[in-house]
Image 1 (spheres, rainbow, N blue to C red):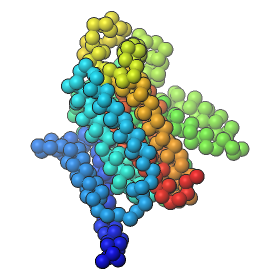
Image 2: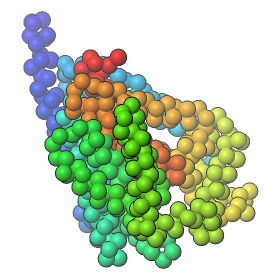
Image 3: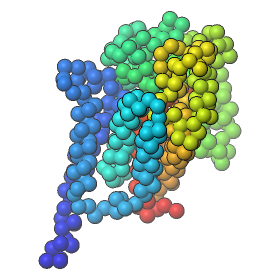
Image 4: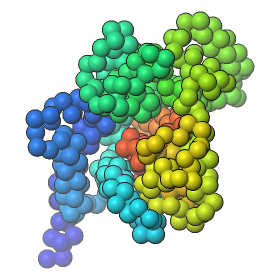
Length: 434
């Protein structure tokens, strides 16, 4: 009887693996529709429930089934630090909400945050081998390729192919419309999601991915062109940071000085060929009269710092900053608008709404994800090493771009965090961690 009981997990292990394979389907769909949400909205336009909701329901259901099945894999017991940090951050956000003034807005925000966190946690259960991790990276890269192609077409023709939301279709600068690609998010957020795809493609390419090099190079080329045409300064700066990290990898080689000089020459030589809109947006940094939104961004920072000073421990509460933004004490701030706006800096936003305790947890989570990707990049498994390096490059670029947007609840940020953490857990399972 005891021998049968001990053999049962081994018999049922293939069922858990099959369930993981099934759960990969909604996870892949989620990775794609996260960037091509406008396509999903078109598909579900006549349905009572959206494609994102259906995908999340399927993902949660299959993940729960995986957790219920016996499993002999060591992954379950390894590397729970990332999951604990995620849980700690959400619990602190709930605690901060209980002390906030605007609880209705805070509750709506917590729901949105929970929806963003859910796929990251599911990733820690489902993705149990490097091949599945690589498949998810390719799904994100493929979605980016489609979105980049849409940006190029829309920038050339001045049309809108799939985007329908006001945020995606009305954004512009100096009378020139900006494309959001395959997303219904605003063009800057869409560009930062595309930045993730470009960073992953570049990371896999420069990490030594031998297969599909032409495809990766093509995605890198059209993705970079789309980021430039999109006119999102933050995404371009994030791309620059990602390229700088890849160049830094060669710092111990004799070719390193040549790479640095060649890169600087290439940037200077490319300036005459860049779109005038992008050049004007960067030039406006030194001339606020050319871009009135810069006054508003400075006001975001000043208001956030003032709110943090008055409530430094637990902050003003999740989702509460926009309602403080429109209060009378800040009515005369330069560029302030009469309707709620989010604080366009992910890190100060986290500190303002979660307090310094929440910010430290958030910062620890980001640092742990980067460290996990770095450890995976040093793995003896070539697939895992390539994925870890690519995730580190993409996450670093996105975190630079987050200095200019309120993305602490961005679904793509949490997905990449989950993948980066999981890459480190997979290395630990293989027994190659230091």
